Length: 318
Length: 313
Image 1 (cartoon, rainbow over the protein chains, first blue to last red):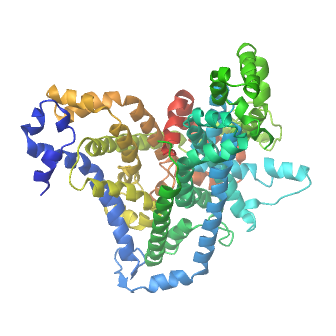
Image 2 (tube, chains in turn yellow, cyan; image 1 turned 180 degrees about the vertical axis):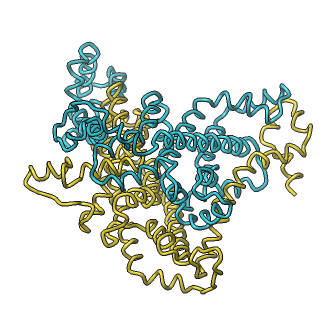
Image 3 (cartoon, rainbow over the protein chains, first blue to last red; image 1 turned 90 degrees about the vertical axis):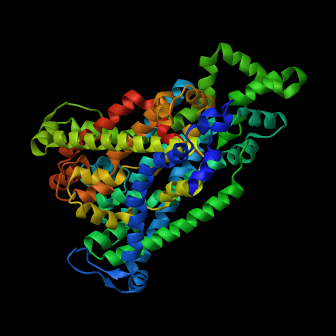
C-alpha cells in the first residue's frame, strides 16, 4: 500500500539535479524508512504500548500476581475501590503539593536566579554553572544517604545548626509534619541547579538587540524584564513547567522509597509510590492497574491542555 | 530586587547598542557610553562592583549545591572514631571507611556491573535512535506522523504505570534478578530518538545528496557521512544516556530484589544494614557517584550542554 505513494514523496530525490538516483530502485527506497524505524518501534510497542494495554486489561481483573492463580474479571470494581481509598486521596493531595513545590524550586526560583545573575559572564559564569549543576548528577542512593546524614538527629549538620540557633529538631523523616518537606528539600536540591541552567541558557539565546532597542525607546529595566525578556523566555518556561508537572512524581519516587517509604502514615507518599505499594507490597495487580490507568488518563489530559495553552501563550521571536 | 532596575546599563548588549547610536543621540546615553569606555581599560575595577550582588547570589547557590557533596567526602575520609566531628574542615585523612566498605560488600563488582549495564544501555539507545531518527529525518513516508506520535506519546506513559506488565514479561523470560532483565525493557529511548531527530533535521541536505550522487546507499551514507559529522552531538547524547542509566533507580530496584549486583540496590542494602555508621555509608555513597564525577570532571561541557538542551525547546 505504501510502496506506490512513498516513491515520489522520497524526501531528498527532487533536490538532486538529475533526479536519477531516486528512480533506481523505488521499492527499496520506499521500504527503507520503515526498516530504519522498525527496531525502535518494535521496542516501544513491546515495552511501552503493549504493557499499557495490559495495565488497562489488568485493571478490570482481580489478581495477586501469582502466575498459577487465574485472573478473575471484576468489571469496574477496582476503580470503585481505588477511588474510595483514603490512601489515594492523600497521595493525590501530596502529589499536587509536590508539583507546587517544584514549580517554585525548579521554575520560579531558577527564573529569579537566572535573571539576577545574567550579568556574570565568561569564566566565572562557567565555573558557577559547573558547581550548581553537580547535585543533579548524584545518584539517588547517594543523595538520600547524604541527606539522611545531614539531617541525622545525632551528629547531623542541620540539627546541630538548628539547635545552635535555638530551634532543636527531631528526626525529620519520622515526623508526619516534616517528612514531605524533607523529600522536597532533597529533590529540590537536585533540581534547582538544573532549572537555573535551563533558564540561563534560554536567556543567553535571547538576542540583546530587543532589550537595547527598548532601552533606547526609554523602557525601564523592570519593563524590559517583564515585557520583553520573560515573554521571549516563555517557551523554555512553559516546557520546564510541563516537565515539572508530569515528572515531579517520578523525581520524588526514588527518594520516597529510599528515605521515608511514603511514611509516616502516608504523609510523604505520592501517586507512583502508591502504585508500587498496591502492586508489589499488597500484590493487588487490579488495584494498582486501575489507579495507574486513571493517572495515565489524568496526566494525558493535563499535557494536552498544556500543549494547547502553550501554543496560545508562548511567544516566539521568529 | 534593588539591582533589577540598574540591570540594563550593566548589560553588555544594551551598552553596545546605545554607544553605536551615540552620535545621533544626546544627553542620557553619553553616560553609559563613557562608562563603557572606562570599563574597557579598567575592567578589573568596575565590573566586579556592578556584578557583586550577582556573584554573592551565585556563590550562595554554589555553596548550597556543593556543601552536601563536600560533606559526604569529608565524612568518608575521616577515621571512624571522628565520624561525628563537627569540624567543617577535612582531616585527619583516613581510608578506614573505604577499607571497611570494600571488605563488607563486593562494591568493586557492583561498580563494574553497573558500568557495564549503563554502557550497554547508552550504546543500544544511541544505536536504535540513530537508525530511527535517520529514517524520520531523511524520508517522507505514509504514516510518518502517526509513527512519530508513538515516540512523543511514550513520554506520557510513566514507567510506574506499565511496571507490572513489564515485570511479568521479564519474569516470564526468566530474567528476574539478572542485569539483562534490567537492560532489556530500556533498549529504546524515545527521548534519544526525538533529540537526534532535531539534529538530523538540521543536517545539510546537500551533503546527503552529494553522498547519494557518489553512489552511496542510504546505509553507507548514514555511517560514512551522517554519523561522523554528528560526532559531538552523539557524544553528548551518549554521555547523557550513560548518566541517566547509571542513576536509574526504580527498575533495578524492582528487578534486582534478590541480588545486589548493581550499585543502586547493593548500596540500598548496605544503608539499611549499617544504620548510623555514617563514615562507611558516606564512603559507599562516594564510590557510587565516583564514575559520574569522573565523567563530569573531564567532559563537563558535554554533560551540561546535553542535559540543558534537553530542557530547552
